[in-house]
Length: 268
Image 1: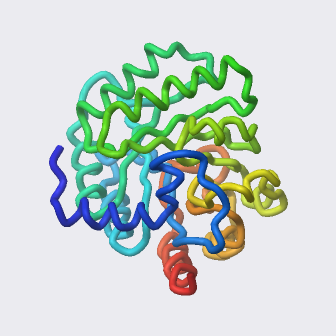
Image 2: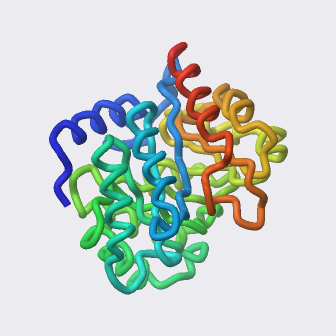
């Protein structure tokens, strides 16, 4: 799906600022300062029911760097969905990047099934990359080969295809060293848990652009984002929604969360 030249230029500038060395080649090493902080939103919101939230994300993409994860049916589903197409186009045309959700069952799902999901996303939707969920956190030789194979496959799609992987917990450094993804989520937990735990010490030797953290069951999403902004991460998202289904909607204080990011980025 063609995206306007202006939108592509906006997206390119934003993402070059967000740790391009982590995306374009090699394990990015420590930087002296933090770059802009962006939102990584698991937008598991059905646009046939709630297109307004996708429109909010499109507007948000004009204000802060945005990655929005689409998830039609625990993956791309069996056929193109016109509602999801419209939602993805709205975000992409506003300068955001849309990622397609693909689960990996901690390295146990067959490569062919995962690759088939990747193919469907790139064939049907204006995705900028893939979000690999349920990523293994232990870097066995098998897991390194598995995720390395998937990374190569996604990158073969060209156009700077991006890979975000979700161990959701602290994970072995070898995954970052071997560039099995461009961005790794090293925390996906209730806000209290995320705030009370720190990153693995080895992450300090890598670009902030390689790391993201997600928090749910939060009391004040803007406050959570301000706290997480002190960490070596480039992507963040907090929601008040509970653990039962935290990504089913945008939180009612989403606007305040976006404003908090704008304030943070104004000082960087």
